[in-house]
Length: 327
Ligand code: 8YV
Image (cartoon, rainbow, N blue to C red; front, side, top):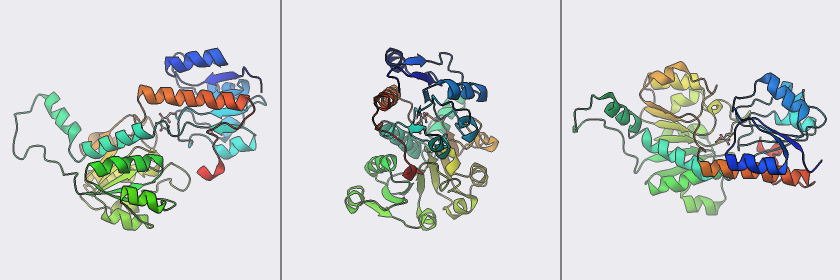
């Protein structure tokens, strides 16, 4: 492919990234940051050599059917690739890349923040102050639950899951996990992590559950109504991965009925729409998909996108090429 490909970027990226892209490629930026509709996605598919989408672009088979012969690379800005129909892209000979590793620590920080915020009722406390109705300290006011000594069950022990485990140990949580594959014994030992082959068995015994697995066909609604019913009434659930991993309607029902104690959600099944009941409940903390929202992280992600485009255009395999085994 030409060394100066036409790169179409679907959203506004940090300035230093956009500037560098303008220097390196024939780049079409989205200065207004308005998310692409189906027509805009279709035009990008037809015109670009390289398309740079984000999680807000649904690149399904129908959109990919619009791809012209020039489109060779989809260099996604983000780690999750569930917004791209990878099989359809592959069939058309389009390479897909993502930006793993650079948002691990930020996402783990957000996960830990929610693990602390929900049982300790941070957002409720803040709302009380702002409501102007706080009457001062009270021995039974705003009582939450202790973190130290509790059991944390991590679903998905990849890079982010392990980074959460490292943080959680510092807060005195004992680490449990369920994963497609058991970790290497050395890592298990380092994290003092207990492996559960059976997710059902783990769910019944945990005080806090953290979702850190990707959304794939195998993990869609992994946390179903049946599984939520297995959790203990005092248990909390935190999700910084993808909304689709939890049956959001079933979760809202369980939270409303106090079948579980609370939830911290950074991601939702139908973003930006949120299951209406969730916004009415005070035992859930809601974040607008901010897990990796640091300027450092976003610049690192952009740099990865640039490296992926450059290596691909130079005729090499890009470092972050998405492959079948990720699904
Ligand atoms: C990103 C994310 O900000 O990378 C991911 O998978 O969920 C987010 O943290 C977003 O996807 C960017 O496209």
